[in-house]
Length: 36
Image (cartoon, rainbow, N blue to C red; front, side, top):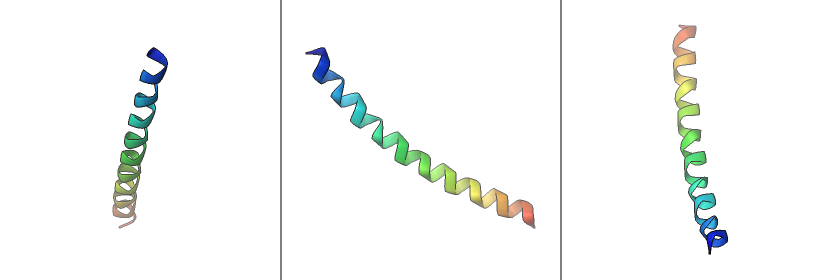
């Protein structure tokens, strides 16, 4: 039972990974702001 329970958190980790892609793009904006 605890083994299949581990399957859920693994998929739950996939969401935050995509959520990290957004802040990465958000960092590109301030970098350009520094160029000006």
